Length: 85
Image (cartoon, rainbow, N blue to C red; front, side):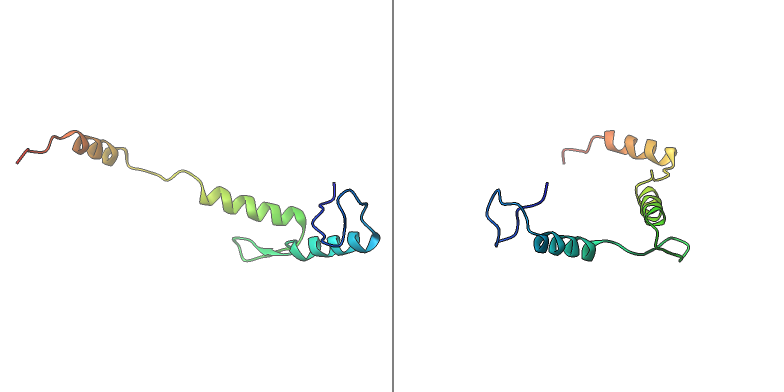
């Protein structure tokens, strides 16, 4: 359904061709047309843009490698009791 965000239209009124063209022009102005991937290549197809975004987000949110010995040492230090003095 079309958004009723136009101040010149009444609620429930069907949008005129002018309003439809204006809305599409706004949508196209907000679209991402090109993006640079991790190799420095410009991606201009929808498939390439989606692939660049997903690979970026996958790298950004992948698990961080942690040394298990360090985690065990940190857990041991957390269980020590501090002197009351």
